[in-house]
Amino acid sequence: MAVSVDLAKLLDREYEEMSLDELIKAPVQALAGVSEGDAEMLKKAFNIKTVGDLGRNKFFRAATALVDLTDSKK
Image (tube, rainbow, N blue to C red; front, top):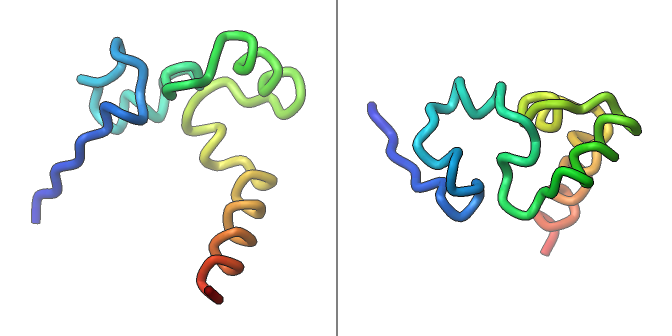
């Protein structure tokens, strides 16, 4: 089953036409609202360079899981 998703609101304009595989390899500033300065801080603090690195980071995943668990109780 094919799935279509509009990611335009999540991405900077220059990254909107990329495939998911390309987006995972894109720099974190491909995400709307993430500046080059933000990206540099993520790199220094957590060695996060790509969208994939951010999504796979154990600290961000743990925080997301905690929020999801809390929100599911509401």
